[in-house]
Length: 334
Ligand SMILES: Nc1ncnc2c1ncn2[C@@H]1O[C@H](COP(=O)(O)OP(=O)(O)OP(=O)(O)O)[C@@H](O)[C@H]1O
Image (tube, rainbow, N blue to C red; front, top):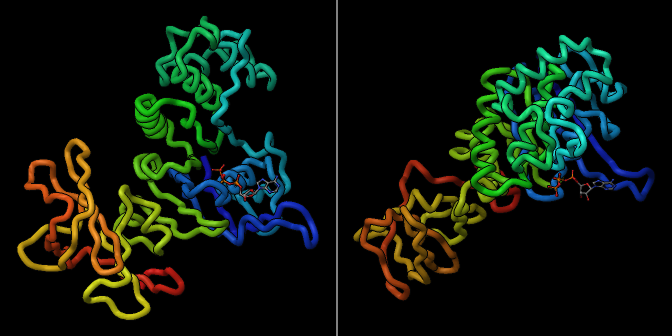
């Protein structure tokens, strides 16, 4: 196992005046054995960052170390990593066992050793009874587990996951997330996991890197990112529905934006006066969409509590210890 250190990582695609800068100097230290998720919207550079760690993409500036070794100039095969992709590309004509064993055969690992490693991985992934099947005889989730098995048998220092769950349906995604967590607990291998899905990031990460337009906006535990977002970007990207961002709140100062999550607003007898636009029932809770001055906001209430109706004027009160202040110009937390 090993730590991963990113020092001032810069990436430009192309050369000269046409070069397209996509990563603008990322610094991060991923601890030995840690599970870190890189999350951000499409195009923010998360796959590029992961592919630079993997050695699939050249590094324009800065250094990447795995353990004590700077790996900038090492081929992917020399980096002691294993990667799991969205398209797991199993060999269709090979059995599950052979798919998992293939990389080891190529690397001339002895047969007994291959069998031991594949059996162990199959046990962890509950694939033991499927070893003789062909990929077409498996469900999507089982195929994804075989792809993970192929990575595990290599006993790498680092696992790199590039959106491995995005081809699975919602239920299977949730299940596979639990399996990945279990896998990490059992093997403790340092892992970097890329996703654009903030729920996936929150549930899987020990710590998460939130990326925006080639910059690291925040690197922290899910709790830190949720409770003390470093910027307006993080505040609105993490959490669903997103944090309310109010320019005209009664007690706000000029040049600031007040952030308050929908679950931290309560309907009260007095307080801020808002007009209800619509109310949405989401099973266990309701979302009340309202307008206050020039701001739109969402209040989340329990399904059981009395619901306001569209057109009503109601009063709401923010929880005083849950206010977030941001600089309107820089977007940074104050
Ligand atoms: N080979 C390339 N040449 C030029 N630009 C590229 C190349 N690959 C990616 N880019 C650009 O780099 C930026 C980051 O791309 P990247 O694939 O890392 O984003 P991402 O956050 O992983 O997005 P997604 O979730 O859509 O995969 C994008 O603006 C993309 O257009």
